[in-house]
Length: 233
Image 1: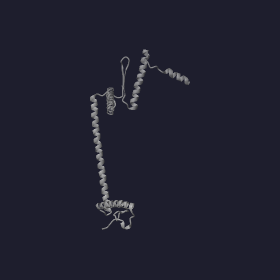
Image 2 (image 1 turned 90 degrees about the vertical axis):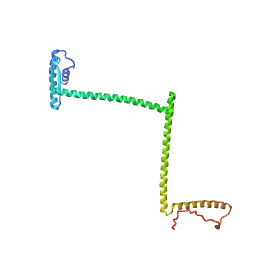
Image 3 (image 1 turned 30 degrees about the vertical axis):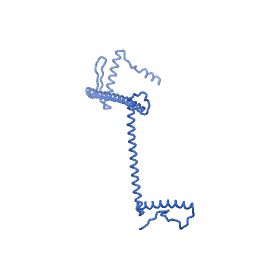
Image 4 (image 1 turned 60 degrees about the horizontal axis):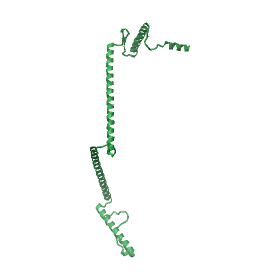
């Protein structure tokens, strides 16, 4: 039974080609036309769609169905078709412009790469004297710009170091004020102490090499080893 059903379904299929018999063709046209118009009506009612169907028979007879007005639907169709055509034209124009821009960009990249190779000293055999002069001038201008930038960086670094120096001097002055000593007096005392220490060390080294130093021969200096002592006047 199952196989017979399949055979009937296969036999029931109609090959999609023109029906040669005129009578059979007319009968099939009437059936399919009625079914098509019925389906269009059901689609418009069930889905609240605007549907229009226009059918011309082989003899030129018109059959139509429209859920509203056929002319209104046709105008709406032309409007949408024109908009779609306009959009298609704009897309094609945009694609052409993109292709043109891409080709121009590839050409510019190739020119820049060739110029870069020449600036690095490559592919100079094919250059004329004028092109070599242009490359030399371009290199001189680039070198001048690099030197100016380098000098500017050095000046900025010097300014930063001077600012750090001022900050350190201010902090040093604050520390001297906290310990109650004037910066100028502290520098003088330290300078005398260092000078006396150097002088006494040199004299003591010379004397020790020739004779023994007694307590009466010792010279009192201002050198002091240890933390600074705050003197109150």
